Image (cartoon, rainbow, N blue to C red; front, side):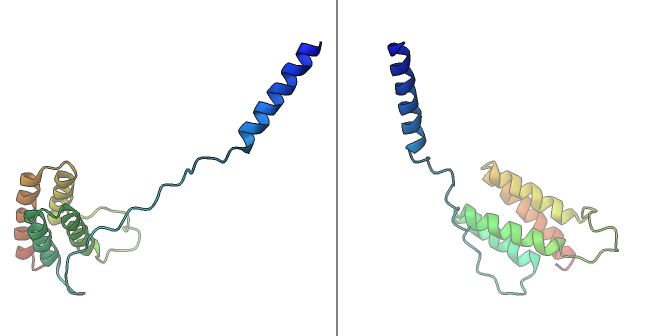
Amino acid sequence: MRALFLSASLLIAVSANAWAQPAAPTSVPPLAPLPSPNLPEGAKPSDALRAAQAALEAGRSGEAQDALEMAETRLLDRSVALGQTSDPSDNPTVGQISQARQALAAHDRATCLQLIQTAIGSATARGL
């Protein structure tokens, strides 16, 4: 009986000690923002695409990613009829930028540059 009592006391002491230990931090520190391309406020999507191309050629993939996202966002800013706000854009330049972003994420620099060049041509032809 005495052994049982000592075992129970030891188990309680170990459990209490475990609860008293500080918990490991579970929060992840926030990521630093991507470096932004130096573009004026009203820059066209084609300007952002050229900035992405220059950044990628200079080896600044974070800046290229931000410029691609900027170009894509500006192309997605459009007027649509009520009830059609969730319909995806049928603009081919948006698709080209999306593919370029995927190539950049896969570290496929050559394909990304090729897709950016195609998107620049497409955006320029549309006056964007």
